[in-house]
Length: 288
Image 1: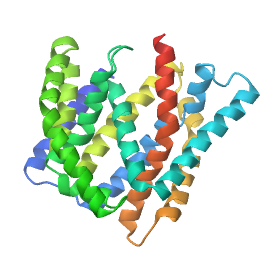
Image 2: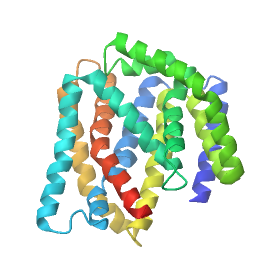
Image 3: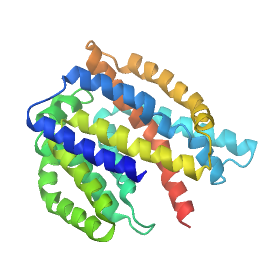
């Protein structure tokens, strides 16, 4: 995994270099690539939640299996209903939970809580420093333009406030976690600032977070055959992809690329709620 992490650092540097020469992928192409990678990497990284629940003893009987699926699906449907009625509130909750969940990628110990959350917040808000108009554009697909504009302004102000903290976190990782981990965090922060928001989302959510989590699951669930691992994750992945079409039908408007992006974001948001709760609980159990 160290080689893959180094390759991501190199990819980050390459993307930033190309972006500095105004080499920018067309927005509609960015949407297409993002949705494809969400389907192939983002969704599958949560497709093993039942096996995670089984590993930590949450589904030790048929009754508990039924309860698990009722609660899990219930949270997904409740989140979807909340998005339909209160999109701005749902977006705020999604951003907060994402910062918490992404921040856990950088936790060093089980008692390490505040720093990972702050790192997760930095990852989400640093893009607004340069790309506030693009983020406002994307958010306006989900909520009213006025709310999107106000939210991005707040994020941008907070980003400049937390920038010194981001520099300190990089210094801390270089000094205490090694050069690879230090460069890894630095590349994520620099990518979040300089890359177009959707390109950064592809880089971090799909190529960093999802693959890192899949690698963790492969080892923690004690697989020794990738084919078996892939097949076991396929059913829930296909169900989630089918659910994407349902979300699209509910939230579609008139612009195809906007509607696809909006549906993909909402799908990720609604399945993040039970997934994040389960994974954070599993991490707590694993730490103990």
